[in-house]
Amino acid sequence: MKLKLTLIALLSCAILFSQNFLEVQLPKPDKLSPFFIGPLLKSTIHYGATPSNYNGKVILFNHGYIDLNQSQFLFDNSFYEKTYNEGYQAVFVATTRGGGIWVNGELLAESIDIVTEKYDVEDVYIIAHSNGGKAAEAAMIQYGKKDKVQQVFALGTPYWGTYLADISQMPWLNWAWRLTGLNEGARTSTTYYCRDVVRPYLDNNPNNEPEKFVVLGASGYFNGSNLLARAAFTVTGGILLPVQGANDGVASYRSTLRPGAEYVFKKNDYRAFFDHIDVSFGQFSWPYVKSYIQNRSQKNKKSLEIEKTSDFITTSNYYIIHSENEYEEIVLDKNSTSAVAEIIHENPTATFKGITKDLKQTILVKKNTQENHKSVIPLSSSNIKLQSDSRFAAFIKQNNGITMSLEHQIKNKHPLLKVNISSTRKNDELLLNTETRGVIIRTSTINGTPVQSNPEIIAFDKINNSFYFDTKDLEQGVYSLFLNAENKGNFKRSIISGFVVGDIHKALDINTEVDEYLDKTNKSIIITPNSVKNYAILSLQGYLTSDKFSLTIYDITGKKMMTSQVKTTQNSQYNISEKLQQLSSGIYLLQVNNEKTIKFVKE
Image (tube, rainbow, N blue to C red; front, top):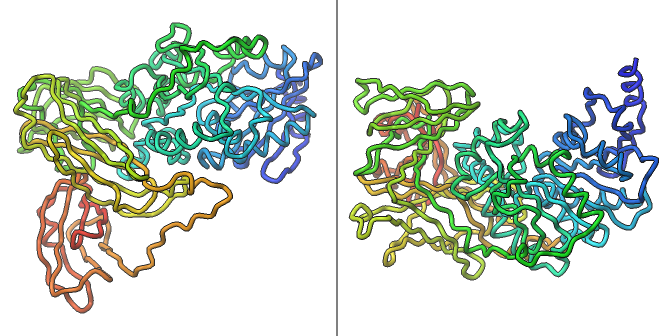
């Protein structure tokens, strides 16, 4: 009977329509059914019940994803119950599923106006989980609501981005991001977008009031108490984040440190040995939030140290192989006797086997550990192909002292990429004759609007003992980068990263319209079919100015596989089946006349 009355109350609740939000009235916490399913497809404001001991303070909760917003008041999360019992008016705001910081920030700004008017208050407290913390700063700074926000409590917010998002921008690896169920929203959450756009733009904005931000950054990946802590979205975090130190499975502790904010927990603080899911729950975070609201402490100056962007140098002791590429094999570094393959796989219970290079012998590969979508396999053999019943990406780690690092040096609104290869052994001859190359893809405009573009191959110039690539000739926008260094027979290393080219202030000025680059040429390259087996036709338009053209094919790391000269024809169509027969199955890049590059799959 109680459940029936609850469902009737929910069905009869007032659903009002504002410009961009559904508005839903929740019952009291003890009357809220665990089976409640609110709106999942539209931005929504869930109003908590007003407590009888209402103290005049409104707490606005924001997650940053439409359907995950309900986790703030359901699923044994005690935030709603605790705030209600202690006299606070709770409001739960869902913005979009993947609109990114600027879209969600504008929506959150609108919701702040709606909520302050409804409850006749001057300002609200915001408790924001994950990307909600970035939406909060955008609402306050970019969209002018700083005077309507008393404080922001950021729970696991990746203010400096997350490597999970970096992976999502690689088209041949974005299936790994889809495992999270979050799909969109990654473009403005990459480490390089936050470093190159969000932080310099917002931290130096005259509307920035960093003292209003209180950060709760967790350090307890693998220590989460919640069953959801083993969700797929922590898998890639568990592989890529350890190089950045303490993390919660989604954001490294360092990434949660908003410059100028107050940090509740220190790195590896015993009080914060919980993960990205746990930090969003009231039973873990409310005691700390409550103490700040009721007795705002004086700032600890040591907690206000701002990490310089130059400290965010990306390093790698691994290289990456992809399941769809039969040409990629596991090769141990010279003088290395073992390695570890940390593997993300689409099938949660994938199996693996190793095949020798001549395909004549199967090597037993025994897993050290396996979780959903992740396996760790020790390796002691070289020149083997890893096969599985699932798509996968394997990070082959070798702790022999050879590392690659990527640093961004800003020059006149475009970065200079600097790569160093180093070894803990002095005068290491393995570093001689190293090739450094990259594949870049322009994924969005500076404001986060997605664009469609083809991959480009870039080469790095060696100057002294470092490798450089100057981005000055690239059009403005946000670029993903798959960086690879190789010294044949000695070692390989990979880094997934990216960079931003252009004037961020002009691009993000809400009062200025920016004319984005439009390719008005009629140039095109098409392979039919795109997934090539025994037959392939190359169609060209607008590229041929002589009686022949160059055709170059690269593997997915940018390594040149073959090149040839092709005579032009009047119909601009070319049967290239024979040229592709020698290629193993996998993903390749085809380039015409060192200009346009397209991706294709060889079955």
